[in-house]
Image (cartoon, rainbow, N blue to C red; front, side):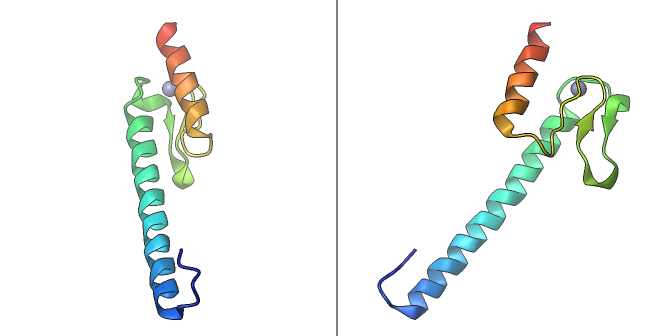
Length: 80
Ligand SMILES: [Zn+2]
């Protein structure tokens, strides 16, 4: 962010920053959905009503859990 008192560039910086955040959020959602659909459990185990992305078999919540927790659980699942 530009904090030099130049209102115009600060607004432009803020808009660019906001656009980047929105893009990152969308990409995060796309990747979570891809991993949820392709993590190896049967499609019948997946719960996706109301925008949720959960698996009833391995009990991972792909929408709400932190990514590092999802990855730890996926790695544990592979070891079984
Ligand atoms: Zn699963």
